[in-house]
Amino acid sequence: MGDAWNTRAVEAAALEAAAFAPYGTVIEATGGSLAANQGTAARFDQATRLCNERPGARLAISVFRCAAQTSRPFPVRLLEKHPCSTQMFVPMNAARYLVIVALGGDAPDLATLSAFVAHGAQAIAYHPGVWHHPMVALDATIDFVCFVHEDGTARDCVVHPLAQPGTITY
Image (cartoon, rainbow, N blue to C red; front, top):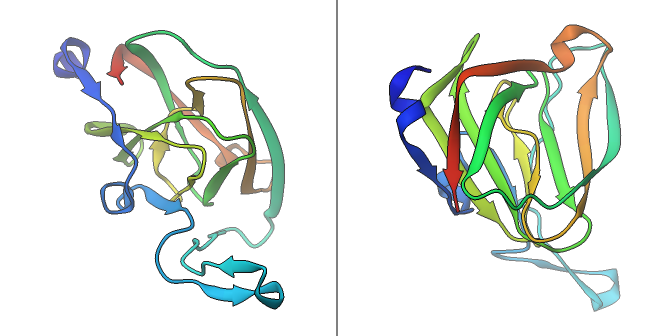
């Protein structure tokens, strides 16, 4: 965590699959498609893989309504992770949102912290164990459908408050 994090702001980049790959998957209608629904739709099969590393955990589907944040730069005071499950967020109403991620084991490695600005036609899926900030809506309130496997134990979600808050510019 240290002084380097406290004295710099991380600049958010546009969300692109290659840059986000260490942290998870970008889900969007790009690349090749197949005809579906008697030709009235296109099907894109590059979506994502949902991982569940606990046999007793069940798929939990929720809706998160996130109020638009206007703070610039955006303050980062905590990160969380789901050590045993993919967590996927699908926006239900198109708008921009901020995705903040880091790698690490028991604590986030802030040297790996990255931030991305996603547009409303992009969903994201975090790999199990990837540290991330709760969802941040930018322009308007956004409803997200969330998919994650849970079993009611502390390993469903691990929260790590940051000793030295940092900032994200976008």
